Length: 453
Image (cartoon, rainbow, N blue to C red; front, side):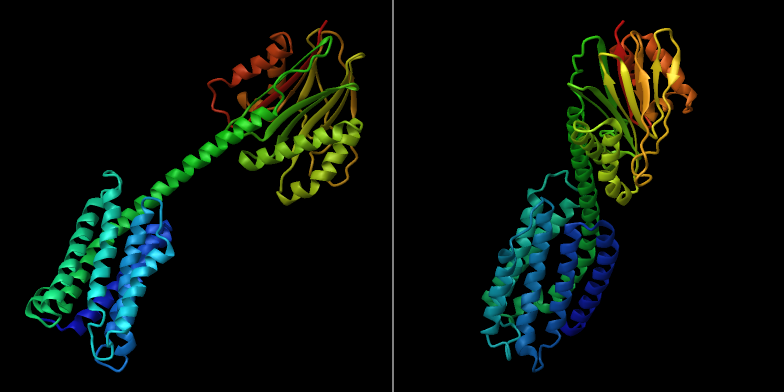
């Protein structure tokens, strides 16, 4: 029979090895709360076992109560880890209550001469903490993990074992034949060491499964947030066309994902109709946030200023943010005077707008300016056009080109096909139909204004 000191050293070596493996392999790869608590438990079991090595020395007076405290706290950490599997953790006072009672009782139970100072409280606390962990495992869904059942069996068995140790301690005493034969330090250390090794593999499995569940829950949460973000973004787009005598206005944005880096907008006031289509470099949430910012800036700046002043003001306001995010925005911004059909256009590096004349001629609108956020203080140039009765203004985002061969020539094909559909709304509907059943690589946005003959 190995002596208690040798077994405690072997237990310490095993616990240290498991701690290093579990922390640096399992916890560092999963960062799961369960694996962190089990790493803490291993560290506490190791430290508590090391403290008992000082029994029989003058340090026993403090080492023995300390060892009791650390072991019970380690068992409490097992309980805390089990609670994280159901998304909870014990309050600090619950975790510290049993270890604190144990160390206080041990300190007043002649620890200088009694190597079993506070023994009944220690054994009862260990049984309680491990029993609580078993209860948490039992309350988990049966299909939670393949490792749940063996862990539950081991936890129940260990909690019962410590309860039997307590009963034997109270009946037979720590020096009695029953206790020393079946529940003594040597037997307990050996059993605990074997169980630690076996249980750690199951713990690693549960940690990986908890990590996978957290990833899945996080992904689902992100999908919900993106879906909600997309819904909000769609509601920020114009919901109905303005009522302008002699004109038809329509627009649509088909995002490639749940949110879009494109936007379109229009504002109808006494001075006429302002129409905007923008495309933020990039995709996803970041591009969508910038798109919303640009749209808001255009709305605030458009009313008191002319068309070039509006774009210049927006560019100046957004320059710092765009540079900080290494982003730029291409934008088509136009103002229409309905009474005459006069159209003023500032194209900020967009270059994807045209007028389809009533006789079918396609006139591509020039883009003499750079995108927003590319060059500080650039001089904005406005182009002048006129919409005659029957003419159709179309502006697209570059996602439309990807529906064809990606070249600028495909814009002419798309424009001609959309114009052939008839009015502004039917042209927009035609573009939307092109995206149906297609896996979009980029957002597709279109705005159309037609002067009714």
